[in-house]
Length: 336
Ligand code: NAD
Ligand code: ISE
Image (cartoon, rainbow, N blue to C red; front, side, top):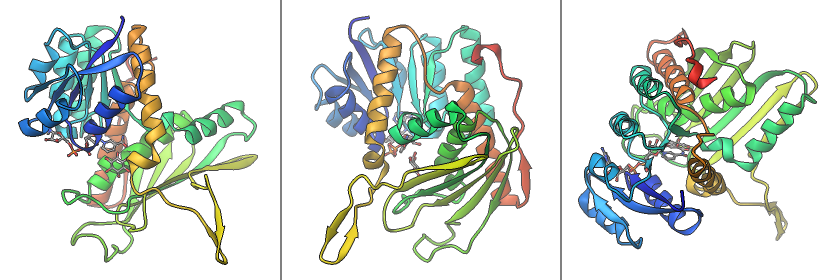
């Protein structure tokens, strides 16, 4: 395939950033269509790119002759419909996380891809493309540190959007740590417990922020996640793995340290588009390259389903208290 014509569905914060990325950074692809239920927004974004048509209906864009592949960046509840249409048309897809908001809808997508008989969908768990996380994964694979025993994660956002609910701290934010845990350790998560520290006064009323989430895995590891989405000072994502013969840690953000006027320090990213800019660039380029070779290489629908099932158990643990077990269906052979 010469140049991949991509339809970007949803042109909000992530979608608009991906349109710019594909137009200016990615090689081998161009944005030929953008879709948004907000027609004005779609028109504005389309006007920034030569040869790009604005749509309000995802199915109409996906049926267009100049569309070879789809990038879904609409809100999670809209993903299932777009994914099922793309699979019906046998189009390659990169779907922003979460694959879908719950396990039942993720299973419907999995079933549609299984029926098609080949993998077509990559899920946007972009931390797998972050240089520091990639280095951590490579180190673990050498076996030098021995078996992983514990993983500590810190996930902090400066402020949460107005629509954020307590369950979204799990389903929208901790979704990333479910994938990081499964990918780094190669284990499935079997149980989730959520502890509720006293909420920060900076959070909107009734928002349970922060939360302290504990995963148990089928490899016997214990994993904790501090999720704090109104920390005020910036965007921080850190991980420390504790193994039998040592530990390794990423995300300290010490790329540059300054010394001035009797103080030392650096800067903290303010949001994900800054902290993970390189990871998104690498993720989209890898997706385009694999798609042009007729392959799917990134996180799969199985990974998206497993994350949805863990998050669902996590939301139950938050709402009902106690330890919730994660139930997964048998892994289809399509997913190795
Ligand atoms: P956003 O609210 O800024 O944008 C969503 C856009 O989709 C809006 O313009 C809205 O009008 C449009 N939309 C709504 N329903 C639609 C539909 N059915 N069809 C087409 N367009 C529709 O949201 P966002 O922050 O850009 O998030 C979008 C997706 O990206 C979500 O799945 C979110 O979880 C994910 N996300 C991922 C990361 C990451 O780090 N990988 C970061 C932020 C958001
Ligand atoms: C957002 O949707 C993301 O995916 C970000 O990476 C995460 O840090 C944030 O908490 C989510 O809301």
